[in-house]
Length: 219
Ligand code: SAM
Image (cartoon, rainbow, N blue to C red; front, side):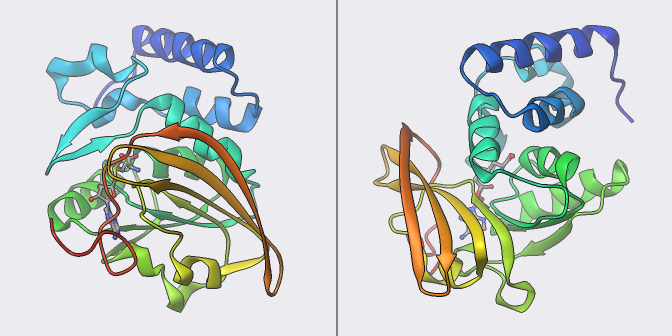
């Protein structure tokens, strides 16, 4: 088990302060970032990098998202403690741990088997209990729908229809959509059975969402 020392807590507090300055306001989100030891997701040699506001490679050509991006997407979700939330792209498991600080009902799906296995080992080691799945998250998880919230942590070419279908009425989907170089963050709210409201936010750069309703199955 890794240690979470005063120096790590201090670096985390500074990161939270930085996120406030960048405009993150949701106290639940800031408290969640403050609570999750991001250095647990890094090799020992890179601990200093863990509390910089940067994405970082996690192997398999994938990244742990930048803390600001994690905070921004989580804030857009308007997450409540009773929400059932689906995360697409477990990756390192960091965003999942942030979600778990706010609601215990987290479903997370990862396409890449080695990353999926690694994240599962991480959750088991720290006694965390998200519902984990290996597979193509661009199609969502129909057997567990509906979800109050869905967060996609990879860049999609379009908004997958399956994800819209699996959103509860009143539910929110947060998803970056665009080409390989840049994606616009979208928040889509299901206002009724067949009406969706769409809001656009800043541009981001994510690794591609693969799979049937993503960029395809090339890895
Ligand atoms: N949320 C992650 C974290 O906190 O570390 C960051 C995720 S990384 C930016 C994007 C992840 O999405 C990668 O791990 C990638 O393998 C995964 N991914 C890409 N396409 C996917 C798909 N169709 N279904 C599930 N996961 C997918």
